[in-house]
Length: 442
Ligand code: BUP
Image 1 (spheres, protein in one colour):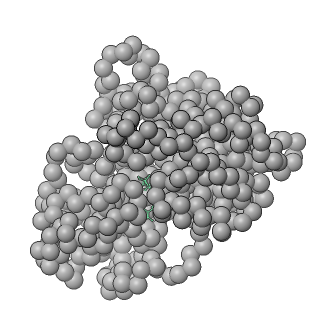
Image 2 (cartoon, helix red, strand yellow):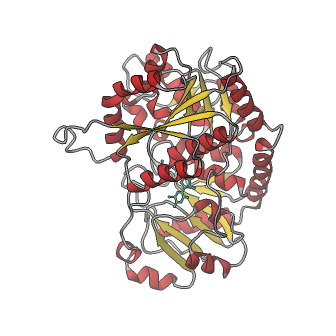
Image 3 (cartoon, protein in one colour):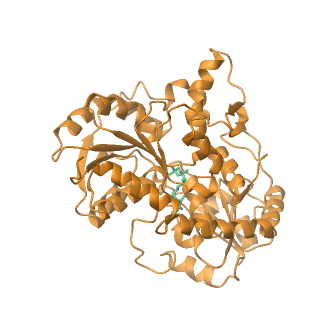
């Protein structure tokens, strides 16, 4: 770009777990003086996502908003599809012809595109046609990126045979039972290669997959992989605590490191989920789309459960400010669904994670968390709609085990320091972000 100000066009996907890292990168780049435009695909999946976009543009007024309106899907064709994120992806795939003119018509000229991994197959061909470099923001672990990179090669070798366990060269073996179910559907593969991949992780936690990707062991000539995490929040903390007065008051009454904070898992066992004896906070999720939960805990769990745990267990629905919660000294561990943002946030705060994978990449993230020494994985608990009901006794036993694991607590404390070192001046993620920005400037 001859040293001129680069103009980066971001094309985010949907889902808070995808939007959060991309918004953080947008905020970081804008603060570094890079010209940034953001394609806002409408309608958003939820009102909460719409408000999330509005908040970004309000906080960073120099960031340009470029609206793109999706063509409606034929309702009859998708009458049986319930996944709102799949419907959204399908609608985008069918409206993708609108992107070319957006990129080509932008002023100043777009010098680079950054898009979400789920949109690469749509966006990369358009970027290639317009000769604009296209980078991917990978919002989950490098462990998953390694599998993602290797998977098309694995499928070629299979020559149409049934999918089994997958050996990722130089990294690990992924049992078929842990593969993200979307990988079993070849039509959903996100295989197009971009010019570079930005990953929200840091080198200390995932050395093996990063070395394999960067060394060309998985795919010869794989594009550069820039680890840039843990990404810093892009919204200024306006209030102390979680922003929820009742929750803050309750947390304040708990002894240090006593509470297990849980921001996701479904109600696995409604009878004895508090049987470990620790004070606990249970954030009950009943919908796939974040912040759309309306079900009352008493209706989902039964009033009897809430009565039994009264004073010790707090059950709240839908959403808490998780990062603020993880920073609270009362939080001694985090029972999490296995989103990678959550795992990184916990490690940055020195909180051990017990991963109960639910779907998608969660089992890969659980493998990564165990490998990094930041968490434990309840390996034999059910996931993705299988009908294995985890018992309250199993949950209680595992919670007790993790709470008592001083070795794990010590290794999370090291990871916390390494996380801080990675983003501080001279650290691995700091250097990668600056190297990437220097490349954008050309
Ligand atoms: Br739920 C929840 N509060 O109550 P992951 C999430 N978060 O702050 P995945 C809250 O959303 P998706 C809540 O801190 C993290 O930054 C959390 O990302 C925040 O999950 C983000 O952990 C969730 O990667 O989320 O599965 O990717 O399903 O929305 O894509």
